[in-house]
Amino acid sequence: MSESHHAVFGHPVAHSLSPRIHARFSRQTGIALRFEAIDATPDTFATALEAFAAGGGDGASVTLPLKEAALALCADVSDRARRAGAVNTLVRNGEHWHGDNTDGIGLVRDLTGRHGLDLRQRRTLLLGAGGAAHGVAPALIDAGIGDLFIVNRTSDRADALVDKLGLPRRVHSRYFEDLPALGEFDLIINATSAARSSGLPTLPTSLVGARTACVDLSYGEVAIPFLAWARAAHAHHAIDGIGMLVEQAAEAFKLWHGVRPYTDEAYAALRERNALLVTAD
Ligand code: NDP
Image (tube, rainbow, N blue to C red; front, side, top):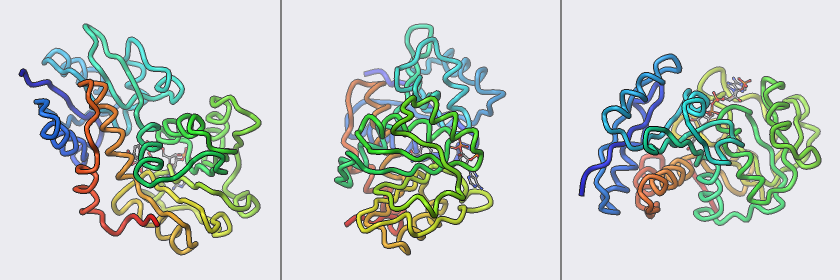
């Protein structure tokens, strides 16, 4: 069988776990593939993607900060990518790229399948309104969560995401200063990259109740501050983004190869390296 050719594009991208995850999926399914990491900035991405296609590229993952740029380079996109306003998976279709977004379904699969959470009617707080928040918000709504409150440092971006979701009675924009008055949530998702820079904004522990699940989309050291806060507030679950990463990759693999790999093995391998960063009881 001929080897298919895939890549992850991002900047920086050297740290990306995608090549390792897809190598595992390849071994498990017997589908031969070459998977490389290609560093590209928003300025160089279009040229790099063209060169990749010219060299026989069949499909690609797209990560920070290129997901919006990827949307613009696609001839057509899936409904969920259009709703997210971002593409994380590119599929070569003849002379063109088809774009999709598997981040949202990846998160929902991790929370419901791996961690056994019933998301229905969960009163939800989403921190952040960047690319990841855009990707996961529509999928959480489709999974049946209750009211969704979105808080972002730049409030205009939270307002824009709320408008885009188009459910004014269920989805609300708030400021960080409003948090102490908002009461308890059943699900709190940190979709900010704050811990990478100046640090997580102050969060009141009154947001957390006895059955609250706290989820950080990040993993590794970046997830530590939020998960430490969640544990200190006695959250029922404190979950990092490793499972979402593996599940979104499995969905991408399925789009490329028509087969969804089992994810437990890849998850266990990555979890071993991040053993302290998840509790689920
Ligand atoms: P973006 O750059 O698109 O958005 C960053 C978000 O963080 C914005 O809402 C931004 O607010 C907020 N932010 C940044 N710094 C601060 C700060 N100091 N205080 C408060 N808010 C801040 O990034 P993404 O949305 O793509 O990624 C967010 C996180 O999610 C990353 O850590 C990424 O690794 C992770 N992720 C994980 C995935 C997985 O598979 N597990 C998939 C995708 C992302 P503002 O609008 O005000 O700038």
